[in-house]
Structures are given as C-alpha cells and as structure tokens.
Image 1 (cartoon, rainbow, N blue to C red):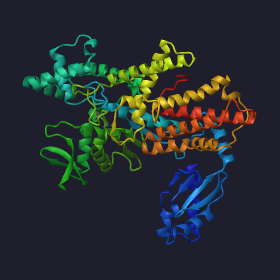
Image 2 (tube, protein in one colour; image 1 turned 60 degrees about the vertical axis):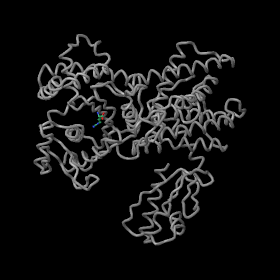
Image 3 (cartoon, rainbow, N blue to C red; image 1 turned 180 degrees about the vertical axis):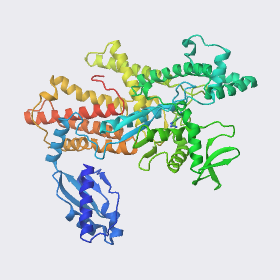
Image 4 (cartoon, rainbow, N blue to C red; image 1 turned 135 degrees about the horizontal axis):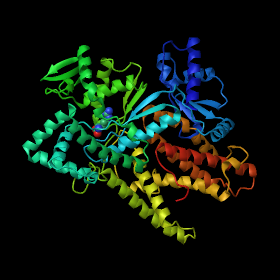
Length: 587
Ligand code: ARG
C-alpha cells in the first residue's frame, strides 16, 4: 500500500509541476509511514512539509493543492490534512478486505517485488576455518540467511557466498603442528579448538616451530602438494563442523556456497598488476598500497589500503578486491551484500572505493556492507566463557536446547493439571529443540542490526515480550482454532468483511506484510520483520479475545473471522520461515 500511495503522490507532484505550482527538477524521497493513531488514518506523508520551502508555499497550502491533485484510488477512502500539513490517508475497508482475500488465495500471500528482479550476492557466515565456529559468526550467518530468504521470496535471484577464512598465516602453524604430530584419523581433529590451542602454544614457545610455520605458509601458497593435502584435510573437517551447525540452526547454506579466500589465490597477482596498470598503486615502506583522497586517519594523513606486503604476501583486502571482480564478472551480480561485523566498516568502504576506481565492478552494481554490532554477555561486556575463552557456537546451541526443554517440561506439568493431554518425552525434546534454536536466532534477529546486544537466555526464552516463544505460541493459537474446527481454510466459504475495531486493526497490519519485506530487502534489517510479527501477534490476540470465532452464531461472521485467522496464521508462519525459524502446531 505504501508503494501505491507513493505512486499517487508522485503523480500529484508531476501534475503540480506541469501546472507551474511546483518548480521543475525536484526529486524528493517520498516518505509514507504507518500512523500510530488510527484517527489519523492508516498512512501519513510529510511531503507537503518537505516541499513547502522549495515551492515557496505554506505547508498546509501545498497540502491542499496536493490533495486536489491526487488521482482517485480504490484503496483509499479519503485523505485529510492534519497538523502542520501532514497528509493522512484512510484505507477503504472493502478494498482492504479484497486485498486480504487475494493474499489468502495466493501461495505468495500477495507479495510481489515492486522493482525489477535482481541477481544478488549475499556474503554471509564466513567463519575462519582454523578455529571452531564461535558466537561472533552467529550474527553474520543468521542475519544474512534471513535477508537472503526475504530477497528470494520477493523474487530476486540470490547467490550465497560463504567467504570462509581458509588461507591465513594460522594455517602455517596448523600444518607445522600436523607434521609434528601426525593426525591419523579425522576423529583426532574432532576438537578443532583444542588442536588450535595446542598449535598456538607450540608457536609461542618455540622460535624454530614458528619459523617452520611461516615457511609452510609460503609453501602452501606456492602450491606445494604435501602442504595442500594437509590443508585440505584440515579444512574438510573444519567445514564439516560448520555444515553440521548450519543444519542444526536451519540455515540455508551448503558446501556448494563455500567460496573461501583461497579460491581467489590465483587472481591476487593479477589484482595487483591491474591496480598498477591503472596507476592506482604507490609504494609505502615497501608495501603496495592504494591511497584514496576520501580516506584519512585522525591526523589527516592519507590512509593506505595495503594490497601486497613488503615480503610479497597478499592480504585480506587483496582477496576482497578479487572477490568483487568475480562477483561482477562471473556471477554477474547487480548487487552484493556483505554481512560482516561493523568493525570492518572501513575495510569495506576502502575495498569498494578501490574496486570502483579500478573498474572491477560496473557503476551500476551496488556494493553494500551490512555491518552488525557485537554480541555481548548478559553483563554488557564481550561474551566470554567463565574462564575468559571465546564461546563455541555449538555449546551455546546445546545450552539453549537444554534450557528450552526444561522450560517446556515445566509447562507440561501445568498442562496435565489443567486436564490437557501432556506431551510425551520425545515430543518435549522436539519442542525444546525448536524453541531453543528459535530463541537464540530470534533474539539476535530482533535487535537492530547495527546495535550491540546482550545475550541473555532468560529474556530470550520468556513467553512474554518480543521473543520466539511468544511468537511460536501465538502461531499455535491460530493453529488450534482450525484443529478444534477440524477443517482447513480451503473448506471454509464466505469472505472477509471488516466490522469491528479489532478486525480492522488486524487487517490493516496483515496488509503491511509486503511493505515490511520490501524494507528488509532494501536495508538488510530483519528486525523489521520481527517487530512486524510481534505487532501482528498482539493484534491477533486482541481480535481473539474480543471477536468470538467458533462460538459466533452468524455463519457469515464466523467465516469472515476464520478467514482472517487463517491469513494471520499463514503470515506468521511465512514470516517466521523467512527469519529461518521453524514453527510448531502445538506447544
Ligand atoms: N572471515 C572474515 C572474518 O571472520 C569475514 C569475511 C567476510 N567476507 C568478506 N568478503 N570479507 O572476519
């Protein structure tokens, strides 16, 4: 609906330009928001206030001209002017009900992308294979997965790229250690974290070991067969650990999506040569650097983007430059989104700017760093184990499932006391698994991407507030309506008619689903979907309490409410699935 209103305003603006009321050459960003108070209509725009100055008019006068110039639309029953000059749009209930009927009849819930379909690279997860996946990579994995799912749902072609760290100096250390203590079976590498620590210890203790490690990195990067064999063996095991976590987390990533740093090895010399040929390289302390005017340090001195070390080695930036070119030329992406820690913001700004200067990507290709904040512990300090180590993701997931299981077990006893059939042990385990995983993911997804947040099991497992258990439970309430009825929505006739205040409010929210997804596709912010689903569940709750469904006498009213409930259920389920969450029919 917001898109429709934006379009209507655009038409009114063009008309006013043609009439000479507005000057030519204005290209305002037309903002349309949902109103908080329904007495102000359903949507509002501040366009008259934005354009009053360039138009040389009072905002309210311009607002009047705009309203007069707005084309009629079936979806809008009236437009009011409020306060300093807001345009308030009121939705037409009949048109709204018809839209919801169309959504109910459509497997896509009426959601279609408004702009052109794009090919989008989503760079996500990207753990460093030398170590076990730890909590730091949870965010890049699940936020990236959520956004990728939304883009796909809207009709974009998504190419997932797991740019794993598989080529750094740490590998020399690991290879040296593998040579020293031959690893006979994969099982001996089961504890990657322990293996890494032991290797690191040797590295720090013994200068000869450290020298050997450095030597091995050079040999590895030069393509030595034995080094490559060990390296492959190590990486395969490390990647299989990651894959096991993706599967448990319900993240849509497979081995086929892995395109690690090492994959660009053969192109790194070319990247440097091409930068040189374009006249973009300067030498600084023996290193090859790109200096760009817009990047200065705090003292105002130029900041280098180093692409080759004095010793000849390549860096993270070189690999990323090679990756931009691959994504443009081979993958033919229109857009590439990088879900990487906010602390790497400068790295990406510089890489993107250099890639553009060098012509590695076409001007039309969008490169966007979707940075995210740090996950802290409940105390607001960096998240650590009791002895100060990094928290392994697998431990965190195990604990989440265990805690969720205890919780549902407790609730199960109350079920029995209420005379409802309790769940058996296997069911409790399954509910615990779904709720545990969903809680960890949802807690992360529901925070604004760029803010830091505190990881807190108690809060995320609460059945109240904007949490996974609350939403999963809300979904089961809808499911239970249809279970009691013993019918599917397809067997229910009639149509949606919006009469009560609660029906209107719920319907208005349901109609916003497409707009919310559009916002996530633009901004890479799944928390918008969480906030939306939370509001939707709240509105369903007031509808459920105030508008009897199954017990209402009038068949037309009952059918309308059932249809509204069915659409709510499907929207909740679809929304949760786009966030990468499983739903339960009972819990
Ligand atoms: N492995 C890197 C890290 O853990 C993230 C890589 C992100 N993607 C990229 N194209 N640089 O910090």
